[in-house]
Length: 557
Image (cartoon, rainbow, N blue to C red; front, top):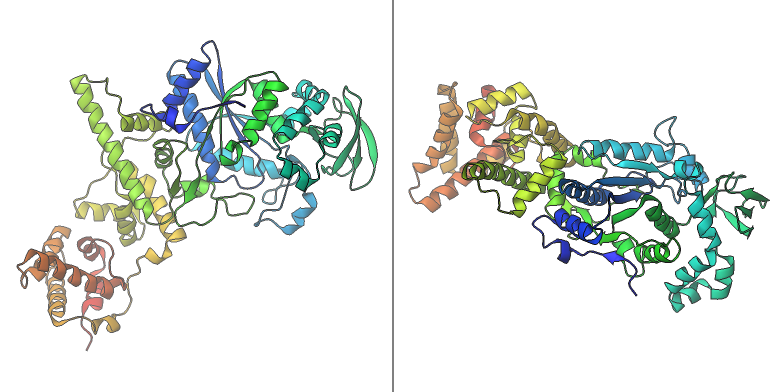
């Protein structure tokens, strides 16, 4: 049985740019639709982890693609803040257990006064999206439910509660029903598609006793054992159960596309169930659905999770990633493909790859403009265009390498003016804007997550390592020491030439020469910073105070 419409990566991946592929599919499927509503959402049960950004960017990229094709399209992001507080995240005071069962919008924020639990995490995520110029139409479910926006559909679901029960039963296995003690006839009679927040405790520990077929239910509070009858059109304490709620919102918002993770995409999972409810209960065609893949963290071993207190939020990543880089990493892969973000040296490669692609496409643009050749449908070019369309990124003609910046900035002790002096002395010229953007990110990456890579210049000579220096390299170090004494104003270029020339006096074979140079440089790094490698030596020696360098390079007696 077909439960809804799914589009796979094999289908939309045929397009040069996957979002165009999905947009074309939607336009073909809904030729007479005046407005294309694409939706996404989440329950703010804790810090909204960056894994959810895949759902956001997938939806938003499709909206932008539709708009670029001349269609009216909008992105709705639903905050399920009327959901129950299920468990206390690892980083929250255990006293919050007293709030389990209440609506997320009805408990206080553990971090900020005058805000609800839901508001705090919602606003944090919304602020993160602003950095990407992503501005969905936010829908706050508590507000919509309590204003009576969904009353008509809620009462429709109540009247059809037994039909909904039959749908849910059809997706259960006989083994599953047996394990849970479910008897079809009893389940059908007792099932209600809503949960109620008790007026005695504000918690959803309630049991519906009866329904008058219109708007009134009688319920029992399981905690206080009290009972009362309420008109749900006047006392709005009811919320549709998740799979019914999802289908109901598709109808109310007229949604035509919504992606989801593997938990929703599994056969017989949330999408299949809600798609069936949408058809049979709300009489609509469910939206087109596509599954998106998992996004991990380089070196991490667990799935990102807000409820476990180990979330990587947008602001966490934006501390080390430029918005354009994050967008590029998501958009260059099909939503169905998995990949990882990085907090280790992999981030060097990610920055380098993006810079290479962006500068290449920038050159190609001018070549094509000159040649008037605009027909080529290049995937790489389409993705760069999409990134710039979503998040305006300055077209760096010559961006500074994140790797080089991390090393050079340490030499300059993170001082911008000194860094500029070092770059000028090294005859290195990069876009100033790229330096300004990446400097704080390089510092955060190094000091927060890669302390072992921090360069610390020794205060005293490395007498232990001197014992390992062979006679040949002792001679090279002594020569360098004399050169630095006699040439206090040597340029970076002068130092570069002298460093590489020293081993040449003893080695003419190219292979042996490179080996000797590596050995020489390794000894210098050990004497200066107690590491086997480090910043480019010529620049490092130029920037270090000469007294410090000479103090560390003099052979101890």
